Image (cartoon, rainbow, N blue to C red):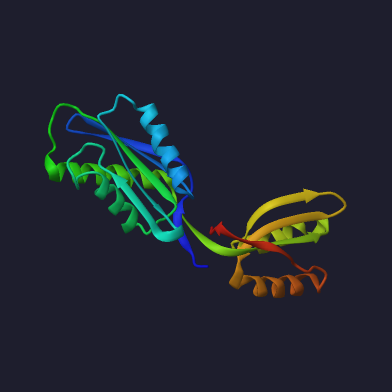
Length: 207
């Protein structure tokens, strides 16, 4: 398993180019079905738009798809896809909606406009790095809670669950290569009182 980049959230941004309105939408997706569903939702929302151009890239099987949706071949879908590829992101779908404003942009103008629409959409979605992580848990006493929180933060761990009862149960994900060092630091800090328990593995956002 290797690190990869994707977008964190579904979002959008827009701009006007020579009276044409361009709206760039982005969403993290895992499958072709999710990508197609997102494209169709934007087409439904903007049923009256001149064009709904899209592109998506999936990590599994390195799937890449795009559509010019009626724009001249190579001026819309490919530029949207190129921006995705240049950012080295996967598991993402971008839709750029255009409302024609009456002024022709020409082939070069279309390429620049759709590239920009893809760029601002991706930026709005917030590019993040996903890394192979181990999911771990530990039970600590209340008087140690602040110290382990600081320690986990120092290691860039993602705390996913905290439960407070007789003691504190913490569940978190951490880069695989850092687990051994974290356990060593925890052992030193607690005089061997706390041992990390491995629950599973996953890809998780790196802070």
